[in-house]
Image (cartoon, rainbow, N blue to C red; front, side, top):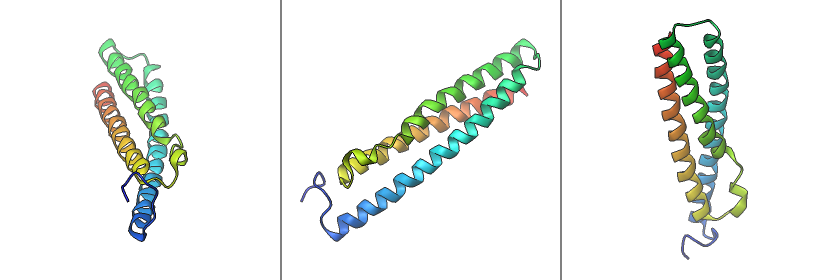
Length: 121
């Protein structure tokens, strides 16, 4: 049987269970990233209200832009799509790679925002 068919052998079921567990882990990571982003954005907005000099204010603004940009891949990564084709190995594999790429995009945005925020403080 090809990987495009539903899991039928014990090995395929074990692989499917492993992928489902990993998808849950990535979902939990995305939730934690959203919590971090909410605190980071509040910190950035709070810092903006302090009447900073223009260069520092600009750095905070860029930090906020990067962090808001990180919200989008994170939210896309937690959309419950596993159920669309539940139990389908190829679909789970696609979901794993998609969420992996989305989390890395979010992490890069967070890092860029952190660098800008560090420049502002």
